[in-house]
Amino acid sequence: MNKLKHLAIIMDGNGRWAQKNSLPRTEGHRKGASVVREIVTHCREIGIEALTLYAFSEENWGRPKDEVSALMELLLEFMTKERITMLENNIHFNPIGTLEKLPDFLKKTLFDLEKETSVNAIMDLNIALSYSGRQDILNAIKKTISQINFDMSFIDEAMFSKNLSTHSCGGDVDLLIRTGGDFRISNFLLWESAYAELFFEKKLWPEFTSDDLDSIIQNFSQRDRRFGLVKNL
Ligand code: FPP
Image (cartoon, rainbow, N blue to C red; front, side):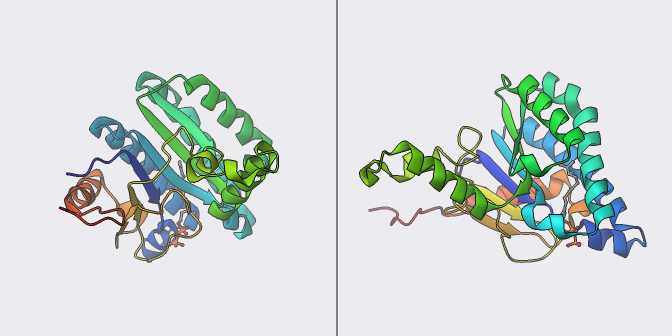
């Protein structure tokens, strides 16, 4: 049975769910945020060590201004409402991405909550915001170069991955789920997902439930993870 330590989710389909229900797109995100609450709680209960959620990509800045503002407001609301739950449940809230780009009102709450929960060790809840996997790799390259004093022989995978934003809060992804029916990873955790098991779920994110997650995890636990090796030699 495979052990699931780091779960990553691309929460896609909020807009289509809203459209399907004749609601504005922002209502889809609001419903999506309530699903985030359910899934985080469930992951904590079933003992997942790290959960990384793709809440806002670097590319999402190109969406209409009112949708971007609504998402920022929702994130603020989520952090304010869930603060106590995270503290009581020993969850480390850890935002990753190009956070400087976020509005000031959100940054302060993000950093305060990260600091306040930083001693919590049961589960890392990584929220990817203004996140780009390629950008994260580029940042890691820059950091790595500054650490090696021009001696390339110092660089290896272990050393390099210490400079990625997921170092110490999940690292390599075991299972990557994308809801919403598309089959792509959209610039998410590119390095960390090298050997992730992928699962593409048809349901839109606002329709996703903890039972759905359980059946995906059941499927994951039966998969033959060979990591490029040959079994039973
Ligand atoms: C993709 O759906 C989803 C997003 C861009 C945002 C995800 C945000 C949330 C689930 C809510 C807030 C998050 C937290 C952590 C509280 P889409 O709009 O691309 O859907 P579509 O493909 O149907 O248009």
